[in-house]
Image (cartoon, rainbow, N blue to C red; front, top):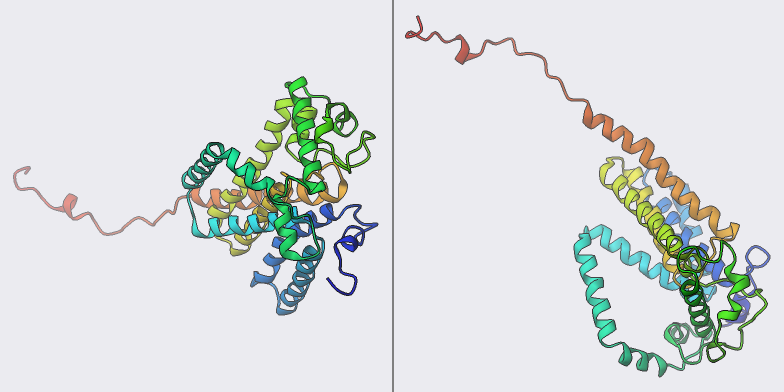
Length: 317
């Protein structure tokens, strides 16, 4: 990269607004679908849509220069989910596809791990090399440290599977659960270098199995409700809003497999704000649709006599 747009600069340029390029990338990825919605909402004026388009270009540029691989993955998954929604692919086919993938993974997991371990490409300023480093689990310190944190979190869960260690305690208690063979050059025992690197393993360690089930339930119900709003509404603007909110949530909680930021205000405000938007759409717009469905259309009584009833039966007389 030229003119100072390097990976090293991408790690500090967002300060003091964000303390880490991964958090910065996660929020950029979250807002990109929302801005796309502004661009394609026809109700807005031309100037608003053009301003939104320019803002979208800056967000995409910022996402690229953030060098956040997890953010790149989350946007790719968001695009995939958009295609699934657009094509109206049924959930049973999606679940079947993932079931086949899981079956293949567990059937060939040793060969898959061998292939991953042969990847020695570390993170780089070159885009292709940086993408290749995503699945480097042999020498990339960032990837190996994530695995170290996940392993520690799982051991914490195994020690206290039902109640966990308490909300917000992972960062300060995970150190003894590390293994020396799993530590990296960026490992620490001081609790000052981030959290569990997962929105799912963190609650699992801190609140036990109920914590994992709770966050999973919240995400599933939120996405399901937004899909329901989009399906039932006849208002194009409501359908667009619900769609982009779904994609934004998908980008964040896909990123959540690799990082966790809901314990910070920078991420929690927009994420829970999206859930609030879904709630408002469900309460106000679905209620209007339901009311319209309940009220029957009453047609005026016909003044013409029924031909069958008015006809005289000679046998009855």
